[in-house]
Image 1 (cartoon, rainbow, N blue to C red):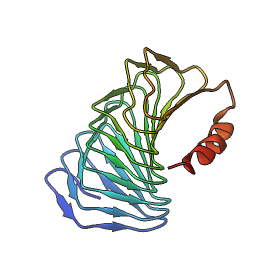
Image 2: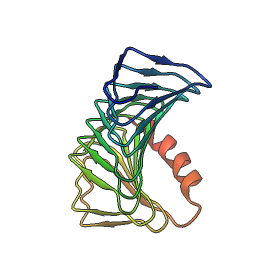
Image 3: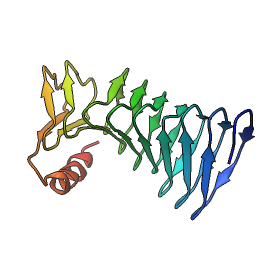
Image 4: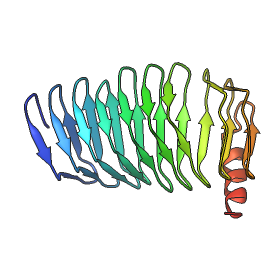
Length: 191
């Protein structure tokens, strides 16, 4: 646990462990392995965290910069800000209502999922990456520039979307996420 005024560098969080960053605390270069959890609370800051497969980083009002999701999951809750996150193969960033994601890069096999009330700006969708539009979120004016995937889940919407360069836009009804995962795997074999 890192509290106000504290700084922790190069911490490793293994399975079954939780590393909490409290208000005013700062962490740098944390490694979260499978089964590990880093929680960043309001006014806490985590810089250059790497989240491996099966690991989790939860932002409950805190701030992250330059997180790399290498198979792990980052959840951005209300009041939290995740900036310059890189989502690699198997990685997932979930932005809930009131959460903010800026400068996110989605690489092949990575997924950014946006729920209603989320704020996302400066998103880069690279070849083989996936942008998921979940319940209540409206994607407006987005254009792909690489062969990538956009999927609109139940109660999500996309307006004035431009699909270029061999990209796929899929609109699913309720309960369609498993079908989408299967379709994405099939399409990903093209890249």
